[in-house]
Image (cartoon, rainbow, N blue to C red; front, side):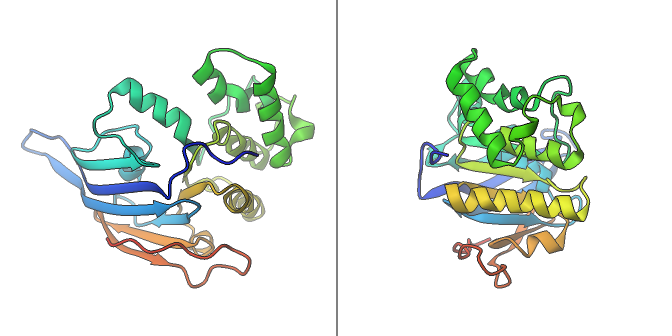
Amino acid sequence: MAEPAGLHATTLRLTGLRKSYGAGTAVATEVLHGIDLELGRGEFAALIGPSGSGKTTLLNLIGLLDRPDAGSVAIAGDDTQWLDQGALTELRGRAIGFIFQYHYLLPVFTALENVMMPVLAARGRLDRAMRATASGLLERVGLAAWSDHQASQLSGGQQQRVAIARALAMNPVLVLADEPSGNLDTGNADAVFDLMRDVNENVGTTFLIVTHDPRLAQRCDRIIELVDGRIVAARANADVLPGSPAAGPASSP
C-alpha cells in the first residue's frame, strides 16, 4: 500500500478547542474546555474517559463533522478554521478514515463494493484502479476470498475488517476509531486491534482510538485521558507490548 498522501510531521493539532451546546440560551453548557493536543505522524493513541466526558464531541470535531465554538483543528498542516463546508468535506474525505463500533456497511452490497464506496463518493465514477485498490485492501485484511459476498453474509468480525478496509480506501493520514471492537468477542476484538496496529506500523497511518477497554488501551503507544471536557493526562504508555513502535511524545494537556 502506498504511503498516505499529504504527509506532515504533525498529523493532528488541536489548539484551544471549545464546544458548547445550547449556545446563546440560558441553559448553554460548555462540553470541551480549551483542548490542546498534538498527534505526530504514525502515532497510535487511545482516548479514554468516563461516559459524558466529551469523547464523542471531541471525535466529531477532529473528524470535521462539527465545528468548534473556539480554537482550531489542523489536519496534516491544513488549518480548518477558515475552510467552508465544501472544503471541509473534501479534506475529511481525503485525509480522515472512520471506524465505528457498528460497521455501517451496506448489507446488500458486496465487501468489495463497500470498500469502494468512499472512492466512488469522492470521484463519482468506478474504474479499474479503484477496484484494484479495494481488492488489495481486502487482501490486506484477510478477506480476499470474501470480496464478492454481500456484507450481510459476513460474520461480525469480518464485517469490521471490511469497515477497516473501507476506512483506508482514500489512504488517509488519520484514522478515527470509535469503540471499534465494542461489538466483538475477545478473539475478534484482538484480531481487529492487531489489524489496525499492522496498518499503523507498516504504512505510518496515525490512529486515535476511543475505547472503554483498558486492556486495548494499554496496547497503544499513548493514552489520552479526557475528564469533564479537559485532557487530564496524555502520557506515553510504558506498558506497550514488545514489538510495538516507540511511543510518541506526550502533549501538554
